[in-house]
Length: 227
Length: 244
Image (cartoon, rainbow over all chains, first blue to last red; front, side):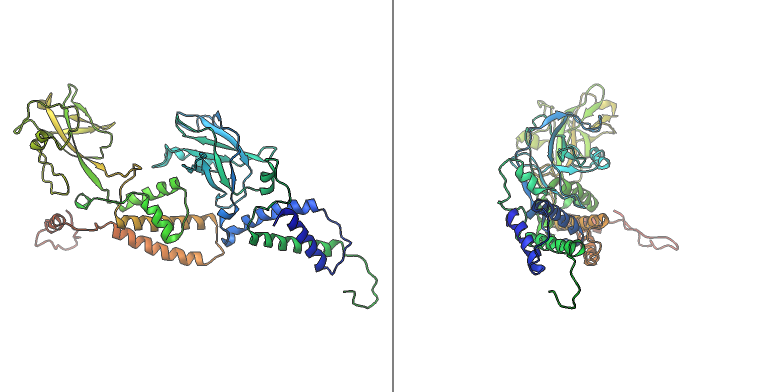
């Protein structure tokens, strides 16, 4: 389904669920935003259930900015001859086991770089038994004002690459699609149909709940069944 | 005993394929290698290859060794008996050159080794992969150093045999599951604990099996039968251990 279709489905469900009561007001734009939020929520909650296959939520990001050369946030963190390569990626979906990144590395997909999400872990990379000289990346989840986060890649050696490709589960899939300027709401929403169905159900129930709690019209009690 | 095992023939990352096939676990390659190497060391059968190295003892008696050297088998002075006058002592020699075959009794593949050619000399190991020869009369003489390197595959990772492949796959799967449970993933799902019990037993069984060679050669059995014990070894309040 497209984003427009999902919003339409939710609106129709809420309407028919209340027997054509039409005097409720809500913003379609808000529902569009909440659809992305609900997708993120379901991915987060999956750590208890383990039914989702992360690969089906992946989005491939190939238009990232060229890597710039810099140092790690803390000088002396990395004992390597090559400085860190830095770029920005969109904010990632929160997963308990830090599995939002499915691939991070050169564009030809030849090297899936190990990623760290915590200072405590990345500082200890040099004590790894076998992979201490292999490239590794540090994902700094502290986002900037655009909602982008910084990726530092180290140990890439003298012949390193200029661009990276990322396959990941991002927090806001629609925003990522819109970032190239071509996505409109009448295009496919990035989630499997089964998940789209769950999102529509969840939001329908939520809006019906809100409606009943707050917007139920006052009616005269004339001892008849209004429904 | 690993000296006598047959040559390892499977690349290290075969165990990652096996883990995917058996347990469906998807894992970053580097993460896998870091964990699996630990498992491989704990199995402990380090498959080694025999190498030899010719060098002339320099004035300071300190001999640099090849970087791949893991264990030294022997250091001997070799121009004793079957001396070849003209030879370049710059490094390892090709085994196919007739002259060097003549002056060495080293086997090619899987033969028993009793001793190396030449007269054994004393040495002490130094840092940075070097030894210091302590026999004064070795100055300027030609040394034969027989050493062992770990048998590596194309990715510079150790070669494995079939038992090790299965053991590593099971043990890494177990560690993966333990990690998930510690992270609090699926804690409400009681079936994880059943799985953990299953995979712990499986991993322990396979690791124990992998510690034994796939094939015991006649030489290996001979070595086992040669264990030196006295017939009256039983003593009160003593514990008996089989030692090689």
